[in-house]
Length: 604
Ligand code: IVH
Image (cartoon, rainbow, N blue to C red; front, side):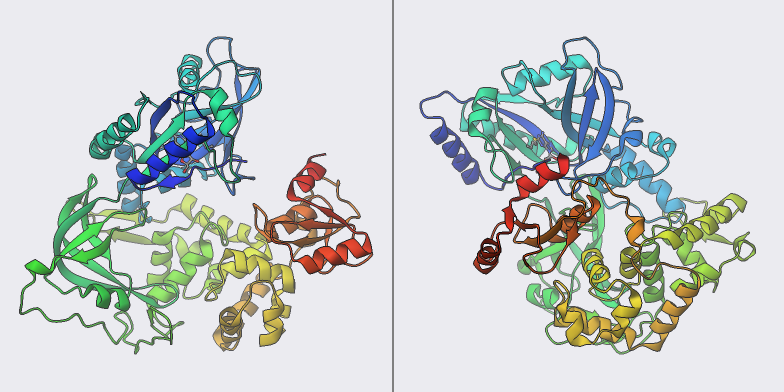
């Protein structure tokens, strides 16, 4: 498994960490190595006979994505190692990052062609690794730092020596490291980098502290989630103080209205901030933010910074309490606010422009129909030209409708506006991408429809439970609630969706275009037939979700059954399995196996 680190946010917690380590190693001298905590995408590289074989992302910690082709384009990752003293087979882990200047260049380019800019360098790195065209990836200057060597027969005695050695083999190891003997040394390193981090060309979000000696690391071992020999210290988010000039209201694809603050530009953690999120009416009320106030903005990992407080001492005594809007700023409909919900909603689902565009953007997004050839900019152009008003319209598009469409983008601080024009190649790609999406499996189609509260995971559960859209549509409230994790809110939302004739018509039209509205069992290729003919009851909590577990069973030829009977072959028991189930399995003589037993079974 690709584990992560325990996080700490205060000096006291580091002190506790040090105490825990020393208690487990009584009387021994302990030395730590401090490193930067790179804010990028975790990667595992496998080398065989000195050649790069695989590059895999973290994914859920057990199964990630194979991104070897894209990683091969990263210049700082050696395809062949120097020297000869490396193990014949080993894995090395690290972090792929996008340097900030490259991130800024890429975002400018994206804005120019009407694509949504990336929120931060981490997202840009992650998005780049997912691209299908490796030659495009090679144009983005990604970088990689390696900090964790894994493998049998590693002869070096300490983490520090490992880092020196991997440098000889051609890897980029962390540049700024310090051996620390005392807690004070550690704090000194932390405090230095907390201030100096803006000067780096890459983003770091903290410091990692590791016990240096391998022999001590080995004895400290791991908990279920992370090593006991290392810990991360996360820097506090940086704040800035600036004036709130005005508030805009944005309407999202679900009709939720988000207030966004316009600020007097201010420098925060290396970038100029002009806008910040205000979340919802409750938060505005709680903060009692008023136009003209001096406000504290903070940058977390989110798309835009958020307002976290107000400097009341500098408030204009004549200022008035902030009033939330009552009508949709886009279509004028009266806003609604449901009991117990924080957000205001515009109810005009099929007539409010940002809701229509937002639904189409969601439909084409990567985890939904994955129509890569259309981005937000292009969807906007299709909508503005009256070609696409509804997700089903995409499948009616013809090349001749699109050829020659163009849009002028106004670029801030740039005298010439950029014109984006649909040429033959673009049009060909768009039509091909739309057509290819007809192969997308039902569970993702269900997610793509954008039914409120149906995220990726719930869509999977519903697809698995009902098997087809027809069965889902037929199901009543109580039947819906029979499915795993479906409660009143989601069941209500599904009933509501199918009670709208516009939605029923959309689904009908999509069906006619050949979109997948039922599970295709044969579509999932088997990983092995090690579980062929075996039936499983899955119960309890695992390191992966229960659904992922069930999928794994099926992918190895096994069958999931709902309840234990004499015919069940195995009960796969996670943590917290109910005592009743155990009793029943025991009385029927059904074998109970653990998650580890299961992994041994499927790996042979
Ligand atoms: S060591 C067994 N060192 O932060 C885990 N991780 O929150 C060993 N990270 O999973 C990880 N910089 O993706 C380590 N210098 C560094 C790191 C680092 C960034 C990431 C890594 C890890 C996550 C933990």
